[in-house]
Image 1: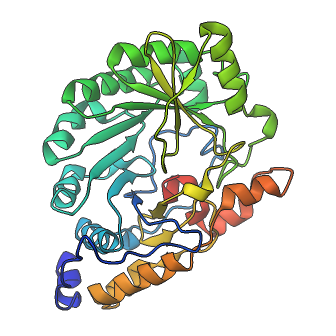
Image 2: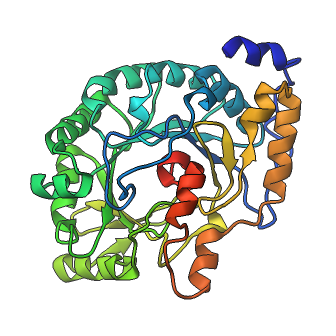
Length: 359
């Protein structure tokens, strides 16, 4: 597949000047960050993400090759993307992933990062760092073995913790731990997780349980809001100081007395759509400019159909300029939040799943 991409690419486009006009959408938001799903498969079945017993999977023949991903990433760079995050599913299930990181290391990117559940990270942390990966985020919802087993339906907490330690020792910048907070499940571990992160030199980011994609068992009463989390920290530690410079980042960052920091991603109760500069590319090449978008742009069909680099760049720039997406804000403004996708819809279109589009 790599050779067909090069044959169909046409003449290499001229390098984009740093002063060239880059597209912004209708709300004035630039395209700065891209999340690339490299697989829709996962080796966990977390209850808040994949609660069902059976799932529809993307056909393997449609999955983008590393050469295709690299070629598309270069087109995204030409419209302003500076950061690429590799996601899944579980991205470390994709064989030879360091090879993709090496390709992306040659691109005009300020940061190459990855989000993983950590199960395979112990063996891959050093090869990924050597290949040029800058930053790693590990999903870690609990430090308790029984809870981990209940949340993920796998008894692999020890492997995850070993993977986190490997990432801490491999020299990645800004190691982060992401925790989805569920009321009555793990919301009593906030302080323990912050302490654990501090010991490893990692920052914990607490994520409000989101009503996205296949979260078919989501309900608002399970959400521990940003305001409630902050109140718990204030009761325990006193002052909680907000840190400046959030920009387009998903997380608001806070500092406790003594200097320990943590973040909160409040996509459910305090959406940050107006500053969102992110879009998502599925493992089979469909591009979604919003996490909540129901319809995407099929880049694989164009790429494999012979579209040139210039034609693909024009598609990306045009679609981004037309972007008005602010899905989380619109859902919150609409009143009662409910799971947005029905089970029958998920079976018909697996790209609606967050494990497919790299939520």
